[in-house]
Image (cartoon, rainbow, N blue to C red):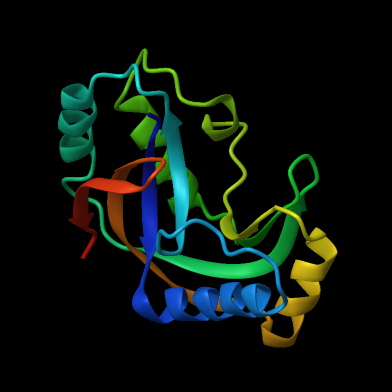
Length: 171
């Protein structure tokens, strides 16, 4: 089972994202997986040693604080129809992402999540039967421009189904 390392959004920002997800569901499109709104920093296959992953995470986040996040645009991954909100890409966000990957040398993160290829995003709808255009139409009335908040937790989850294995506040 794969592992994901995520930055969880604070309660205020998460509630705005969840409202958009509910609007998509009300438009008869399926909801995204049952895990709170987040940015995925890394995705590893189940062959990575969990003890090594947990040890590296504990070490690398020792002095991390919360990360300002401003969701400023909407996007779609055309290959699978995933609809997402895009954060403004800041030096702080890219630095955390790079430090996390550097803390796990030799571990093979999914290519889409590696430094230089990563597209930071918060999933709003994960594809399915309905068109991404329908999902975007459901979201647009709730979109008021940049939505600011913080990412205030780092978590390690295993999925499917989602199981939280480790969580640390980034106060």
